[in-house]
Image (cartoon, rainbow, N blue to C red):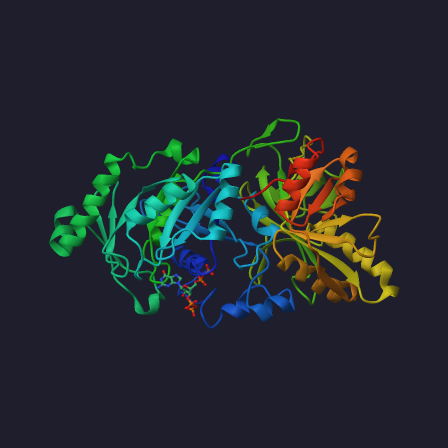
Length: 535
Ligand code: G4P
């Protein structure tokens, strides 16, 4: 058991759309020899059809709304020659997918509660972009260590020192490059390994479809071959060492520094180096504190946290999948576990691994692994499952919504279905549902982190509950948590309305920040607390 835990790494890639997350995912799968040629999972032509197509909307946009997990084995090159399934030489890597589309949703944040590390993928030309920043803040908030990858080094971009400065100055994370590029952005020749002083020279393959051959040489050979380019990489490395920017494992795990790698996901340069860094530096699964404060450690009896629930992924089955991340113990398909929230038994007969369209049955899994439970009608994000001594993990925080709309059924006679559908989507955490007496049950207000969550609601109410609905924008743009004592006064204010969220929290919505500031100034006695903000 301890060995299974030790060899596992569970991580997510955080990036802005177009930084190359899909390409990098595919490159990792190529290096782990899951696929023999790039283009199979996320290739240009195949991309639209290979992403999960659980909803027509997804297909139309060519995006994946779902987040799932890719598991692969990886044997580091330093390992003794051993059969790939020898558990002593092989690592098991879980890459949990974050939805990459421009419209943000709460799912993206929830995924980060299921990982032990993150890879922050940055476009060499664009530097830090808004969504990367938001996701990074969640990692920081949760204490998730971050490895930084500068991608697209085969294209013109900024210099390594410019990128390092930008990251240090804007987010206070200190990059400690493990490898520096030889050749400026746009002329990617190889990598200087700062730990060994060696040079890794890459050779391109046609279309980047195969693993790029590497040649490892010492400094003299590198200098003879690359001349000035090698010398400038060395100078940069020395400068960084003088500034104290060498890898320090403790500071990395504390979230203060970030090991950095330069790569081209498209050419498969630097991808092996990323895998090796994950294996060598990213933490193996560790314990998780329960609501009572005890820590469940990986070798304890089975426990898991549901971090995502998704329905209708497969239109021919109309199923509901709950994705759990195993915290402790061994999972065996068919075992009966207890659902901490209801105290009821839950049979795990149908356990699956899901990535994109592919599903396969999972018979056994260990801490760090992600398992999809089919027809998990009672499970919601944040729920705990266990065997042995009871454990309940803290709920996943819901993040501050920034978009508010009212939802209305266009046919009045579908009350029952509407109500049922709303309860279902609410329990899955698709959106936050807010109600008040003034608007009544048939016109709830939906609150979301990203507007795409609204589209998911209307599409699913139509396809699963046969109810036509319309979404109407509301003139509110921010929310504060309030209390009973403040509610009446707040409701008297112009541009303010108070709602009850399903979990019982009272939320006051404000038209804009000036309205909020005005009310705060006029009525300092009112309770107006910020919600957990991701960024
Ligand atoms: P995403 O999942 O983060 O949104 O990014 P994705 O991998 O889809 O990559 C976005 C675009 O960037 C794609 O080009 C992809 O080929 C390109 N790209 C990714 N990594 C690299 C890299 O290392 N070097 C270079 N030069 N390009 C890279 P596209 O033109 O938008 O799409 P496509 O038609 O090429 O697929």
